[in-house]
Length: 166
Image 1 (cartoon, rainbow, N blue to C red):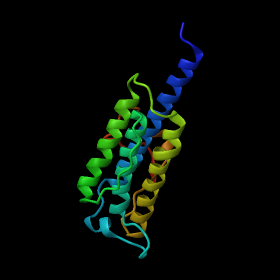
Image 2 (image 1 turned 30 degrees about the horizontal axis):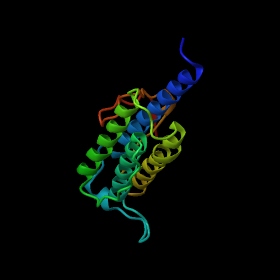
Image 3 (image 1 turned 45 degrees about the horizontal axis):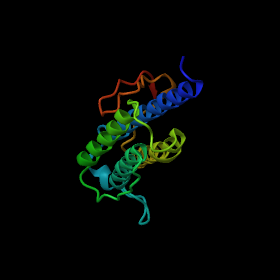
Image 4 (image 1 turned 120 degrees about the vertical axis):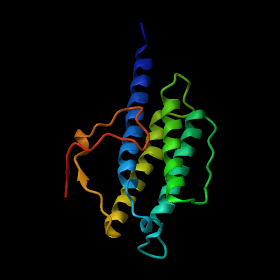
């Protein structure tokens, strides 16, 4: 018989994988079909551009992988192109999800991964969505509660939205 604490730990890990898949789904929507001029759009001198935010998302998720592996390290990457940073974002999501899908021990509590890199990532995806709207390149709103979000699906290839609205 499995110890209850093992069941709880497994449940937390699966919920964390779902949160990572949610970040992938929402991130894909924010990134997909962005016009080239969006990358450098700014609303002020002291704000990040969508490209800088996307690069920061890659930094956050690479940090998340290092936390999961137990060798925390932070790196601030110089932003590349929109395509390069998109690839880095999904690559880091994939590495994080692959680690979470194993039975290897986590280097920190699952709650720390959620409250740190994953929640921060959701915040920054929201910033990209807002900047898209301000740059006249909006993404349609969606009922995310019925979206097809699946743990393990963490690439740019996501299910079609089930219900979008303006």
